Figure 1 (cartoon, rainbow over the protein chains, first blue to last red):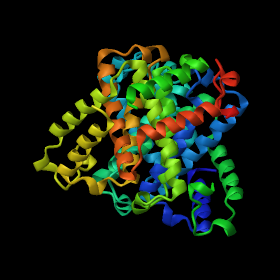
Figure 2: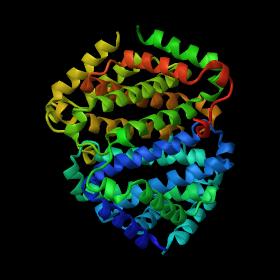
Figure 3: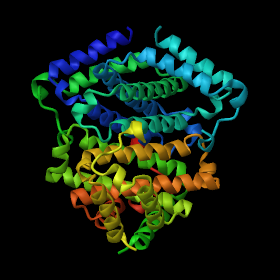
Length: 114
Length: 114
Length: 114
Length: 114
């Protein structure tokens, strides 16, 4: 199953419930922010190492939040007619130019240098 | 191009720069939150109607932020071995049970009822 | 009761539970993000007008989330020795210079112009 | 200077620019989320230890973001007639009941237990 088929599932879900009217991009951005908040709650007190080794409950919870975030992100793309795969690849090209390997290798640019 | 190919592009980008060491799931959740903040900044003063009719600058900026969010979300999936398509479909099934059409049609459950 | 007294209440709460060790600024930023996510969930499907006229449940829930956000924000200030009143006033001065009345009156600078 | 005086500075700033019309609670929650995103960007790649020992640039940047967050939080309180000091103290009382010292001392309840 690819992204287009997933979008159809999401569209049908919303159509069946007549929820399209709530789904302005502005509202969807807030809904997305809500889900990202829930993802933060899972990781907030974990060390970085613990975050790499989640309990099975933690991993299950993370999967659900990651799914919620992806669903709202796809919904935003649907409402604004954004081709997600395309914009990802375009952004990766930009990133490659912005962060040349020979300048940044092994050393993350801290915010002060961005 | 499908999600697997996109993941390879993202992995190569990180490998080339030796940035894997920064990409603990905890750190990636924060980076994701940062990008979602930028998406909020685009939409914060727009009316819902305006958010449906972005200027071409606004749409271009939105595409870049949506891409950034997707990239970090995929990175989290890569680090935690999460199959994104699978978890989206599982979550959509859960949502269908949680929000039965005959109970919620045309009327979004406000937070107090959730 | 002023901010200093509130900080003492928060410090005692944390000391009594021996939770200081979890409260690195990094972790506290994530906890703050989680609470802001919950605030988003209250407002996400409301119109702007509805957001000005919350139900009593909605207002009560908002008060609790606003409090949670303020508590974590104060905790960040406590850990980094930031004088909140002082930095607010400094930022307001900066804002006054950045947004001169005669240039921006009645017209919010959209993100493209910032 | 106390919170009431700070609120007056913020109100005058908004009045002078005729920006009140943009400041629906819904919009302000998004603006708050944007600023919290910027705070995340400062801390995302730092270790917890580094987050306790910010560079002077990092600390200055943090002060500004903390101020922005506080300003929008106070603005939300002003629009919804919320007494911030009062709701903080009420929430701290609730927290004290929710997390009894003898049960949680030295051991943060992970999300799975909440």
